Image 1 (spheres, rainbow, N blue to C red):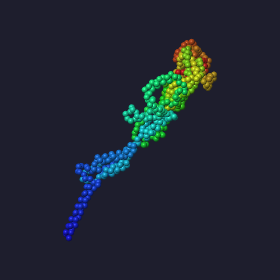
Image 2: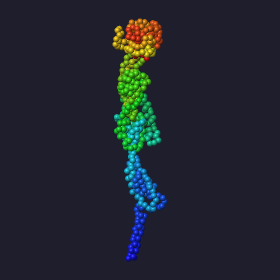
Image 3: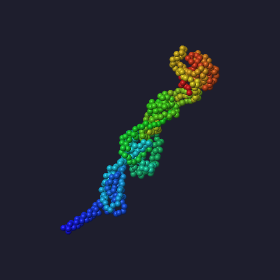
Image 4: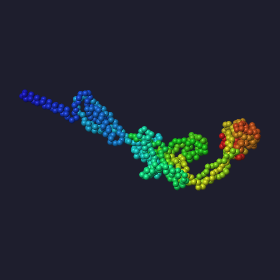
Length: 527
């Protein structure tokens, strides 16, 4: 019995040893298990964004596999993909251990990266014009946008836009070249033309000279749109952007071609009025007054040469310049001819000849920026009926100026119809009144000769002064006269003291200006 028990124990021990040996062999030679040399950290757990995805026996190889996983994802499209992938390796030293196969680990890495795609950047193109920029999804959309800008002024489709590399830029930047599609594809050089190329320029030069000497008829001119280009420099840069930063083509075309209100400034020149400026800048007059409310009150506001008015000019983001050769017929007027008279004042004029309009035919090169004409060069003009100019004689002598004859004072009665409430006072006031205290100094409004100085019925004490330009000034209701008839006075010289003589309700100065013997509103002539 005892021998049986011992034999059973030996058999069990042998079985255990055999089992352990078999397990050891499986560990050493089975798939996925590796024997490691004891040389520090030799077994690594791979984590991506904190999640363990496998094990490797070589840290550098894990990094290579991550790079390969990124590359495979990037090659699936032309878009630029950003992935949030933080890989960490936790190492330890072991004698043997299970490691993942590279194909399996690469696949797991790809899946992990796809789950952590942060942002996809699309290949796109940024078009820049001055400070304006727009992002488009493709080069075809860039081409369509630019073509739409010139098609706005080229209904026949004669011109197209080429995108060319900007040789002045260090980086790969495209710019534009507007070409005449008709001329670009109009012909080819035959072998005969090629052989004659050496002497052809000579014939061309001779022919051009002969044509210049011949008078062209109107039918000889090739009319229509001759040239186009963009006025601003256009830059196109390839880039990568998120989809939400791209502008749809239709919206981009609307932005670039629609006229925007651009702030500008207009300087007033001689002869300008608000109505004429409104016509010049094509902006309603009330809108100009609104934009300049600090300096303009209404359409009667005074403007002076050199004043600057704020205006908004309608302009598209991308402007187009073009030249058209046009034939037209027009009724025209000759410029006014002035004949100077050194014995007349500048406000004196006389028409010596009345004008009449003429009629002419014209061929001209007309240059535009957008819809605005900027210059015109006449190539041929034929007058069918000559215009007759207007001839005007005008004076050259600068007339004397007129100043307010009292300092201060309140304007108590204006020129024209009025209710007086005073017996004997005129309801048609022939001058203006300034209410001033009795004894206030009265000055000559302009230099001249005293024609009257004394009592003047309703005027009370009054002074008349004749001036070199034929005008006369009158000063009434005086308390004291300081000049005599025939005396010459200078502008600003004291001539009297104010009072309330004659028909008056209180102390004031009555002042008149007469032109050709007729009273005019003095306020229209005072400096």
